[in-house]
Length: 196
Image (cartoon, rainbow, N blue to C red):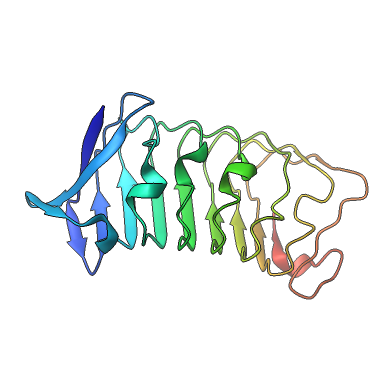
């Protein structure tokens, strides 16, 4: 099944779409429109999708927007991210805010080589079990307002470019033994990059 994204606002390659609807897991993006006019997907560099009826990421999402640099998906019912974001090689900012996401499958984000900002504020994430090591350009991580209670050993250890790790309003009670983070100054624990 295919659907079109209707941009309520489209200015300077930025598409803002409210009330996006995806009811089925196997849906694909068929097109992007603004005021009834079909847009070329490579024109869109920033995409902001919102809508309580947005349940699933389209299966062809990463292939459909080759020049996407900024993606925000907020206030939806999306509960998982799989390989739908592969091939977004230019993506610098990924904001999945106020959704129903319960896990961060970092292996499915590994192809986002240019990613600098990762924001999953306001979801239902309980733990971060995988390392961010494949996201070499990552500078800012926002994990605020989730349900994280434990951090595993070396989860941020291989990212020397990280400047901000924000984890406000979580249930953090335990940091694993031998916990190690390398910050912008290559120190084991740089309190300047942490924001609890």
